[in-house]
Image (cartoon, rainbow, N blue to C red; front, side):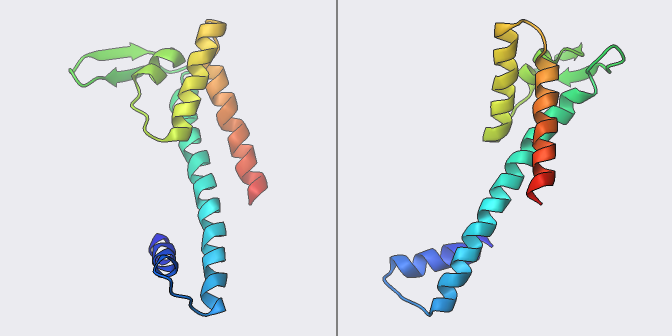
Length: 129
């Protein structure tokens, strides 16, 4: 899909004016691209939430994290797990920042906030279908 959108934009930038059908498909591609971006954002945030979800509560599992130096950390603290994750997606980074803000303000609840945000986004994705 990105190839079709790039080709349509290149034709317009060069001054080429094609038939109205191409403009209609470009509009469809733009709408579809917006849906794809929204879905990508939800999936990225849910992935971060799912990474810490199993460490929540009294029966929460410990996570073993190995950093680049080979040092191993075993924890079930959501703030520690999220601070050691290498997150590149902008929406997933926002979720990590949300947990960091929660840790600064309240000192606790980082896992709960992350899981709650992931669950809300999951429900949003169900409503968007």
